[in-house]
Length: 122
Image (cartoon, rainbow, N blue to C red; front, side, top):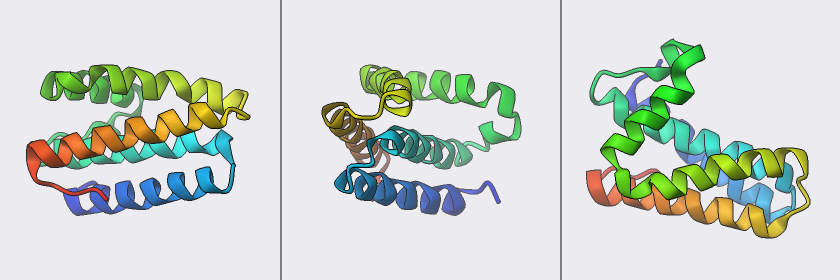
């Protein structure tokens, strides 16, 4: 557990679930799933450098964000938007436009990962 294939599979599964929940208008979970998708993709990429953020849950989030912003600075705005929308969707949830933006940010992030590394998450 915790290797590249494991995290990649989870990222793909969570991406599909986020899209499915959006299509069902279950907006409160779209943010959760999109963030978990991106976190799993980050963990997959970081595992290739023998980094395993999930081992230290208290610092995992901050370490993922720091790592991804250093490796992919061009994604900083999308990362911030994704995490910023998380609370709004999770607590207010009725905002289909916000959920759509979350999905768009997730897709941009995954596409950039693919473009830069050749690794597919969708």
